[in-house]
Amino acid sequence: MIQLRIDDTPVQAEPGETILEAARRAGIRIPTLCFLESLSPRGACRLCLVEIRNWNGRLVPSCATPAQEGLDVVAHSEKLAALRRTILELLFAERNHICAFCVSSGHCELQDLATELGMDHVTFPYRFPALPLDASHPKFGLDHNRCVLCGRCVRACAEVEGAFTWGFSGRGVETLVEPDLGGPWAQSPTCTGCGKCVQACPVGALFEKGKATSEQVKRPEILAEVTERRPRA
Amino acid sequence: MPKVRLATVWFSGCSGCHMSFLDLDERLIELAGKAELVYSPIVDIKEYPDDVDVLLVEGAVGNTEHLHLLREMREKTKLVVAFGDCAVTGNVPSLRNPIPREEVLRAVYGEGEVPGLEEGAVPKLLPQALPLHAVVRVDRFVPGCPPSADRIWKFLQGLLAGRRPELVGADLRFG
Picture (tube, one colour):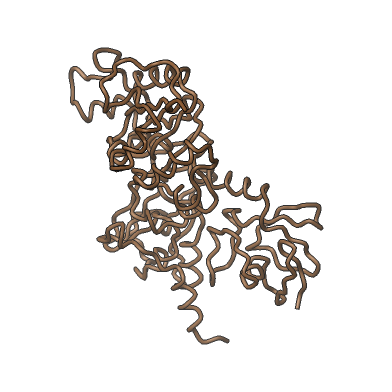
């Protein structure tokens, strides 16, 4: 076992485990958004940043950093809280994340994080980009206005369903999650219509048609349930 | 102890936050013992008075009248509160923000005379509906669409008692 410290608490980790996994087992909550159990870590959102005291205070994403012998990890401090709030504010400012008219309001990880991290307003100017909505699929919809580019749909589709339908197009702030080489989604030759991407989506970017806001409850844990039942090599 | 001089105003919003304020019900009587309402859509006072202690602003800044009034209010007010999601984020009125101003107005009014396109009897529409803090310094933020009466009461009680922050946890929820 690897011995490390998280928030001055001695914690043990199995070889290969990340700092986030070790923290969770020790009951230390670190906020996450792009991380989803059973999918490969991506380190895309940076909300799970922790500070490593004995690496000169370096900031690393805990979801993608292996636990190592003797690490002295700070998971909660005023500085980290301020950094996480800033990251959230940037996410909110980037696209049109307006809770009052979102299908996922009340069941949204971004909305919950804002509450958890005490974000009462966004200090950055909102970009208000004009973004499309793909409602071509008979069962599901894709609203780019709500997307945080966490890539959970991309990884769920590739790693659990094996269809590789979703991918990123464009660069930087112009990046879009798109099926195959571009939509519409209904014409995708690779999509199996399984809906794993929708369950994996933490926000209202991917949603089920015909469901009201109060019914739009996602089950991201379904991906871990599916993979755990599979026979192992 | 002198009463707190309280004001409220309604910009680009649906009046839902004011309705929620009125949902304070019998707590309004307690509030009336501590605060005097010196300007509001629900009282008949035309001019914004001097020396206001607390101003609750519902709605986004959507036109030039809101812009000028808000700046004047800021100067005459100790504590400006962004009251509800429209004032805090732009919210529903900001749905039009990705669309050019003239296109929005033409879609609504058609060809010919369009109110709000230029300064006139109707104030000119701003290119985008903005949250308050994009225009003036804002002292407190009360999210919610609308904030519930319980949340408003919690906020006002905290404010009158001088506690900070007035709202934490689930009471900071947007939407």
